[in-house]
Length: 398
Image (cartoon, rainbow, N blue to C red):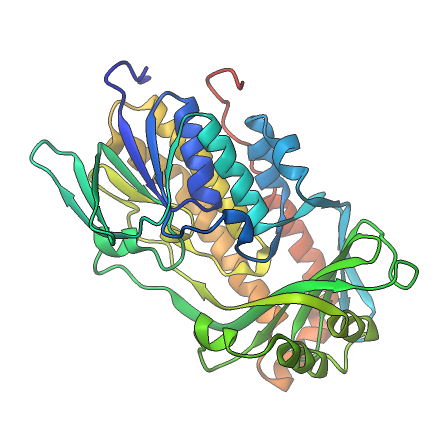
């Protein structure tokens, strides 16, 4: 049975205006819902975060919505991903077309598309309370003392989701994976490191390093390595950028020289973050409220799959809410259709992380012996992960 969303339209509060939340708000608005999008921060989305490598499954969602040119034009395509070991020996190639794009540019462009579609954006609104009213609607409260009401509340507020904590007080919290990530931008002569349309990945002795030459003279890079002691975002931010880059360059001294060359040419701010994951919840909804994306199942980022999985969630949940007469029915069907895929991706991300950032020398030895075969299997599994095809969109895309 399809819900035609006749008047009065159902009012939806989407919490979190990152990639998942902005895309969800856009999809719902196009399907006729009345949507309010709440973001805890006041700063521009474009000013937040490092870059990500958007896989074909994320691109497929944008193409279904007619947003691929508008959004992907903010990034740079990579025609393949190459993997080498710490000696520079090629292990495998993944021929999938991906797009490297700044996380802030992606979420910012989606946010703008959402407001163009009629979504009401509210910034500096940090969620602190949720309660069901006498008529079965939700009343949500914010840190600034204001309140709002909605028929449906959808939490897209990330790995440390407040929505998840309010809906499910006993749910597992985010777990530190003992990995720290960082990323930045370097400037190197175009002759020395030419544009080749390829994303380069290196399994180093003491860390994992990836980079792409985005344009003549400009390189984007990221690095992951093992750190047993958990350091907060604030603690990591206290380290001077130059000191951090110097430490990474020393860490990667045994690896191909190009890594140290890129690191020592770093310019501008260097983002860094502790890496967390959230095991998939037993249920992602309570009544007419739900969580999705990283708020429901934050997989480790070693596959670069988190953003694309959240985009899949947003697209499919919006369709489920459109097709079913009640939110509870929509949530149940949505979870049943998504659970196996999310579990498989989470497992693959953990396995990949163990290979990328081994914590003992014997683990590294075994890894390097088995890596060529393991990488071929990983590329095959990656192709399977990318094979997601969005459900048909029921209305014309403007």
